Length: 124
Image (cartoon, rainbow, N blue to C red; front, side):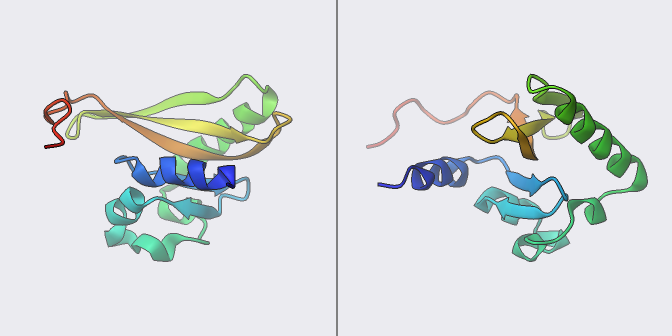
């Protein structure tokens, strides 16, 4: 079986929005949570669009600075970018690298800090 199917399934099952961009800032992938989260901005229609078109000038500048930092060193892979107190989450930019460690893109990672309310092993 193709390992890519496993990786895509991991992304699709994540409850947090995941938007992958290439180095031209083109949105190349959005998981279902991202499509829903960014519905008011076009949702799935954002695929193939430039991410920078969705941000203000200051945000675009910061995105560019982070990408340049990612390029400087193969160990530069994670930057804390934002705290959303309303949703109790931290947001990061994460480098995407190929098998040789070369930068191929980036994504935004959302880590929610609110404790889980689901019951453990509630499968019955």
